Image 1: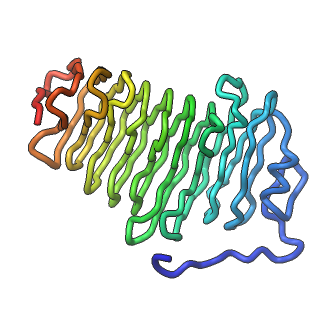
Image 2: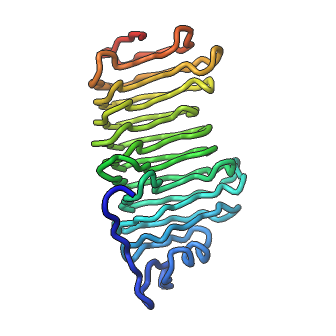
Image 3: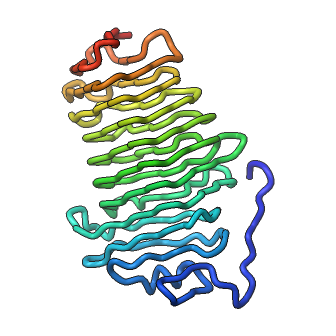
Length: 274
């Protein structure tokens, strides 16, 4: 364990969350009770880890209401990659004090889908050994109006992620910003990074695309593309005005035969290969 962990103790009879006028002493009980189109609102700071299993016909919202949450929200996609149901997590102040804790975790091989994280903060520990969001086999993930600090990564895509958007996101004092080795169809818009390692790291395990628009990265390097497959071509597009600093090359491509294309709609940028 890194640092000193403060545990929140919920007193008997103290309510943790509510749905409408109905209050619950356990976060998990509120998740079990929530119905389609309803909102679970957190009432106090707490550290109860919970699991959400996505099911047909049930879309709902978790509103943290600015409370501090030290647990992990685990999402099980129920192997419904094409499901229409949605999950929104907003206004939660996540605090991951445990070593290598993930504040939000997508279960492997369950195909988590249609998740939006909006207006949240993710804070790790002084050792920067925590993840904000750790993803496996996920579809249509949106992170917006969100900040990260003292993390290893804000987002780590450990297996194939299809459809990922980051918009109005800031990450500071962290190891990296977005580690997306298996990312497909990625979009970064109005993202600000000030991190020690790579800003956005992509491997070409898949032939796909990533778009950057009006981003400001101070990172080493700001954008990194690593060759992992000799045939998959990855397409990078830069729109608007992007500011990249922190290393000699703003785009680092590793692999002598790496196949990639770069479209520059930002006249301030040029391309080098290392």
